[in-house]
Image (cartoon, rainbow, N blue to C red; front, side, top):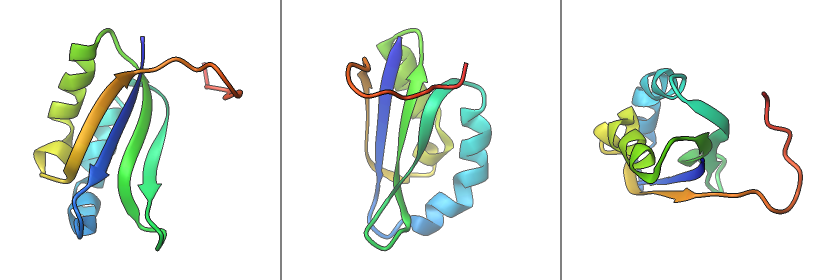
Length: 95
């Protein structure tokens, strides 16, 4: 089942993001992520994250968020996971 994972960083938390980025990327490599990357602010700095992930359930998506090194470091001011279905456009997800 596909999920849209969205996280918005706390204001002024770019240093937390940078300090935990390697651990976050290592963590995400354990999962089936179809697309994702940082959300950029008006200055072009990383200010959040968006992922499209294939996970078993809503509880698995919540568990992913709870154990993300960014979450454990206190980076997000808001994180959410929604079931997602692509209905318009065309994205060539790698197989």
